[in-house]
Length: 127
Ligand SMILES: [Zn+2]
Image (cartoon, rainbow, N blue to C red; front, side, top):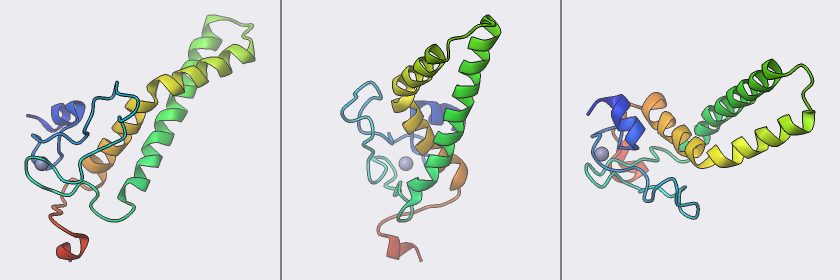
């Protein structure tokens, strides 16, 4: 499987076979939960403490891009846009896509920020 295909399916960045997340993104109660280690190759997903904090930058970029796209959509359709509609659309879009945004950000963090790392076992085992 290609890296891009594995990314889209939410597979492990190391072996591209094991799932990263324990539930589907449509499961609103558990969409955030991911396996600690890959079920297939046992690589540790959170390669260092606080590793996924960096995913916030991807999520932020996605949010800003979506605000701009929604604004472009609204303000090219009409010359007289009610600001309340724009804000409502942004809030609705953000809420609806937040599970996908969350998962995409974590996957991007793993695939882009640390694709070369192999973390097995405890943090102290990798020094
Ligand atoms: Zn794996």
